[in-house]
Image: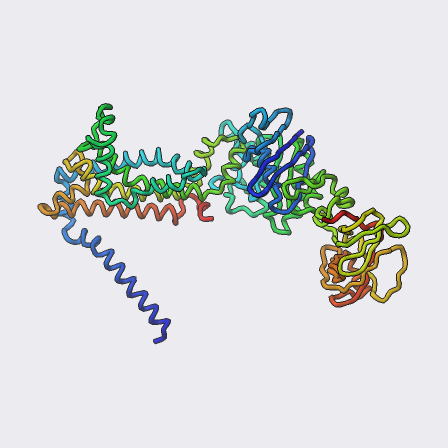
Amino acid sequence: MSGHRWFGVGLGICLGAAVLFLALPIVAVFVDSSPGELIASLGEEGALDALWLSLRCTAIAIAIILLVGTPAAYFLATRSFRGKAALVTIIELPLVLPPAVAGIALLAAVGPSGILGGAIDAAGIRLSLATAGVIVALVFVSAPFYIRQAMASFAAVDRALLDASRTLGISEARSFVRVMIPVAIPGLVAGTALALGRALGEFGATLMFAGSFQGITQTVPLAIYDRFATDFESALALSAVLVAVSAAILFSVKLVQRGDPLGGWQAR
Amino acid sequence: MLAIEANTGLGELRLDVELEVGPGECLALAGPSGAGKTSILRIVAGLVRPGRGRVEADGSVWLDTERGIDLPPERRRCGYVFQDYALFPHLSAWQNVAYPLTGPRSERRRAALELLERFAMSDRAEARPRTLSGGERQRVALARALALGPKVLLLDEPLAALDARTRASAASELASVLRESEAPAILVTHDFAEAAQLGDRVGIVDGGKVVQEGTPSELAANPRSAFVADFTGAVVLTGTARRGDGGLTHVELDGGGAVVSTEEGEGPVAVSVYPWDIAVEPADEAAHGSQQNRIPAEVLTVTTIGNRVRLGLAGPQPLVAEVTEVSVERLGLAPGVPVTATWKASATRLVAHE
């Protein structure tokens, strides 16, 4: 066998090992119990509560991230100013923060005895051990994923498009809506998916900041953790649901980026 | 009427210009890249704010840094054709043209189709920019720039992105648009021939300044600097001038040889002569006729351009002559053939050379 053949075989073996190792646990989630048992344990009240809470909190968190993060990312992508690099680093920091640290940090900032705790309490808002606290934790850990990606997408848009729009009588605010967002949309969708995946799977910061109360702060990951020692079957069922949702998110991103439902202009 | 004054630093460049363009007139700004041509357009459009400057168009002041007036681009009504056309990739051709228009969709569509029709583009109205050819994109960009009835037309290298074959037809189309348009227009190009073809007047821009302004023929006939002479396509030779016999100026060329000129000059000069004023004769032929300047040279290259042939000549300094195909055959011109390049003293321009 020639050296070239050996190299090819080596590559193949490594790929096989990687796929096997990464796919096996996911397949096991579905195979380890029968579909009937999975559905039955989903019917249990606590499981449905957790699913519903996860979906609600994630949806609200993503809405907040899109609403505030999109203009913020646009600002960072189109303006240059002193200290911009430092600002971007601060925004990206939660990306690399250990979840436990994120939870502690949130407690220190907006927890009952945190630096803003008094003000929040005075405003009549309860965050810790409340559903609102879950949303705060989700926004905190997943917003950087979106903002980072959105910033890159806006920066990649040809500046002449914005200039053209403005010389055609359209203000920057309206150009943002009519040109910048539509042209950057594949990247914005990818960023949303990243944030969505991160928010759905959020565990550590939520547990530490909001606690784990069924129906109030116990999202799916917390529910899985709560019952894996006592009710493995039910934990498995919830895991299967998360795997399915995550796979669906990933698949739709690939569809937007490759399958080109927008006509393919972004492929240039 | 468009009046521009700007004095500002732009990175390394110091831009200092004062320009006026009349209604229906097209001023072509020609110069090398980095000379500041595009910056002038961007200042007019409001996309760049100069340190000091004034822009007045159609009787209203768009910019006056002294009085603190600076209209944003969206309130200036400039028809701007960008260098790579900057068509919106997510919109079809007609939607690009209809982009600045307001009103119900059906009306905007009708108006856009009318404009596209004018550029023979109605059958491509539904196409996305990505699927259009370079020439088609240029026409959509032009239609879009005209959609609002602009007060000023700004064209940044409108033909540069086109291949040589489309360029000729696009240029004549653009020329007719410029003829019909009543708005003052500024066209930016790095190609003097293009500027001469499309501009009523040409301004040569170098290092942030308009170094000379005039009709294309004025510039070609009477370049005020070696740079302008070179840019307008002249052959530029360097040498040292002194007063000669018969009211002529005698120029000792660097590297050997000498020429005479009807123009005055003293000390180091740039000698410019247009390739079409240079004739070639067989090397052994004795001097005759009225061509006083005779430089021995060797044919280096023979390039046919349309019905002319451009000869690259190696002499004491490189020369370019333009002759007809018939002459090439009659004289047996080919690389390596020794010749004498000749031209009249009256076709020899002199400018001081720094």
